[in-house]
Image (tube, rainbow, N blue to C red):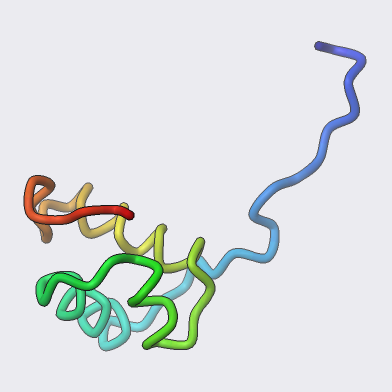
Length: 70
């Protein structure tokens, strides 16, 4: 494990979001859109929208049981 080659993941991920874009994603999630659909609508990478989704869940802005991650 110590001798394995290591890479940096997520080095190109978007970690800075304006409140309006976060609210747009939240609104779409609340309407039942999945993260992959939200990414397409907002013209963002799925992984970046995934981070927004996790942020909204972690800050209790979305209810876990209401959303399907497929």
